[in-house]
Structures are given as C-alpha cells and as structure tokens.
Image (cartoon, rainbow, N blue to C red; front, side):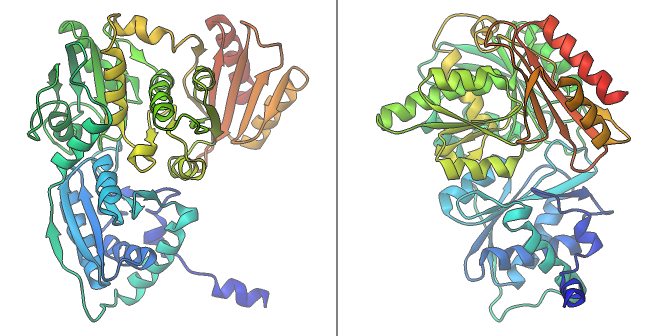
Length: 481
C-alpha cells in the first residue's frame, strides 16, 4: 500500500515546479516562464477557483512580456469556460481592487521588483483573497502539470474576452478612504522606477483620472512605463535604488519623497533631508490612523492590528498605546493576508513596506499607505524628519544576510551562546530577546533561515546604536564562524 501511495502521488512537471513558489508564480521569461506554461496555469486556476461560467480578471504590468502572457492566460481560461475581464495595464493593488469590488478571481502579471528578464503571476480568489501553496497553488500546480502533458481540454461553451478600464474607479475609492483635500500644500518627489506608479500616481494624487486637484505638487521621477528599467531596478528595498530620489528631494526642497516598486504595491518614504523613514515607522503612523477610524465607526469593537516579528518594537508599542491589540505573525505576504481575515484586523504592516487594510479587502496597497502618511503629516506643521522621529526611537541593523555552509550548526551556536541571558521563541526562525527588565537597554534579534538558499537572515534592534552594534557583531561572528 505504501508503494501505491508513492506511485499515486501527483507528479509536478519540472516546468511548473520551476516557476511556482510559496506565494506566487515567478521565473525567467522564455527559460522558465513560457506561453504554454501560462496557458496551463490559467486553465488550472479556473478549475481551482470554480470560475467556469463566470469571469476572471486579468491585469498586467509594463514588462514587454506581460501582454503576451496575459493573452496566453486568456486562452487557457477561455478554454475552461471562464470569461476574461481584461483590465490591461495596472498596478497589483489595482488588480486587488478589481477582484474585491467586482467579486471575481484575478491574475496579475508582474515580477514586482525583479529584473526585466523575469515575469510572474499573482493570483487572487474572488474578493482579493490570497492564494498560497497551502491554499490552492499546490492544486493549481498539479492540474497545470496534467494539462501540459495532455493538453488543455476545452469545455462545450468556452469563455470570451472583454475589456474594462478601472483606473478612475480605483482612484476614486482610495480618495474616499483617505481624503487629502484639507491638508496643507505639500511638495513631493515621486520615483516610480519606470514601473506602474507612473500610471497610478497621476490618477490618484493628481487629476489624470478626472478627479479634483489636491494640494500636492508632484515632481515626477522615472514615470515612463518601461519594463527594461533603464534608470535603476524598481526595488526600493535596496538602498542604491533610492539614491536618485534622495538627491532629488533635497535639490527640489521637497517636503518628502515617495518610491514605488515595479508593480507599485509597495511604497517607501524619504524625508526632507533625503533620509529614509523606516517601514516600521510608516506602519506605526498608519496603525494609529486606522485604529482611530475603527474606534469612531465601532466604539466597542476589539481592534486588532497585524505586524510581523521583525518590525520595530515601536509598532506593537504604538498599537497598544492607541488601545488596540497587536498580533505578531511570521514573515510572509499571503500568510499575513490570511491572518488579517482570520482576526478581522483593521491594518497590517511589514518591515518590507507591505501594508494591508481591512477596508481594502485585507490586501496590501502601497498607495493607500502613502496617502495615510500624507494625511497625517499634512495635518501638522513640522518637517517630516521631526514628525517621524517619534516613531523611530530605536536603533536597527536592517536585514543582514550571511551565506552559511551549515545552517543548523550556525543556528545551534547562537542558541548556545545566548542561553541564560535571553529569552527565546521560535515563531519564525529564532527570536532572541534580552531578559533584562524593560528599560532603556533593551535588545532583540531575529535569525531566520532562508527557505530556498543556504542563508541566515539577521535583524537586530536595541535601545541605543551602541548596544545594537554590539549584539549585531556578536551574532554575526557566531553565524559566520
């Protein structure tokens, strides 16, 4: 019987295995990701979400391969009986808006911040509900493998394709959530990185979608949609990709700068001095606003806010001070969306500048986070550096990756060295917290093994730069010895 179980286990085609990850589809165009693979994945997706006889939303970013792949997806979806509602060029959060507001499952073609040679698919069930390996991607992989082997069987009544422009509706909805017409005038440099922010920023923050002008002067940087990313990678998590924006903010005497990644679902903030405001500080600022709004709408509600375990300690402190309950989670995009829905959390923030909103179908939206920052900052008179300082009281190392030949051995060295002088938890990797009383000398660090590479990822935070550096150097020596 055991051998029968092994033989009966679903076989995943190598072409599918190469592109389907834990949370999405991603691979090198032409080598890993091809039209045949996309068509098979589309057919499998329609079957998985039960979309035959109804509609699937398909959107895409500005990469050269995206329209071709979107057309291949439509062929596979139509063959299995689903109509395709094509929303064309869009940001990832636009595709979530379409899925949430229209109630259809969605596929978004993008490789986010990856280089131009990559593309991929982010899937959503109806209502912008995330799909991960644990909640459907495994089944999609199995079906797609079968379709690649046997061909995609067409149903008796195949679907059709129709187009719809949702940009104005998207912009109008975001403005309804965060009105900006009453703030003081702000001068903002926006670096779209040649990504989809070049389409969404003029619609939401300016008048390109036919909405009234806001008290904002936008200075555009790299707004031309270009999937070859001729100026820099559209990955603002890497400091080198913020240099142009930092320089422009200072040169233009701007109040702040905003940087979006390739599919514009993440946003980073730069203050008037050209210095980065940490995603943790942004999460704390937005959390205060979302808690206050939830309290106004439902005074007796028990309010929850999500934060992952490597955001700054200021995030849970701010959530508690505002009268809400912080919920600490593992790192992971789809996981946090699931936890948002499970807890009914009003907001969720990650160290990677993903921000999630209950009023946005628990999906992430970088533009919406930016609007909250503009609303809160624009309602007072201090410069952003002073305003944000309240939410950045501690010293952090940022994420430091170390290539390690024997990850378990390095992990064990850390545990042995800190036993007896720290508290441990293993929610996600290992989090080590100094067991001194809660005073100005606190510290903690997180060590997480990579799922795909022989790496350990280290994040350290402490009350002072000196203590942070001391802990950082000690742990790195243990990891790398």
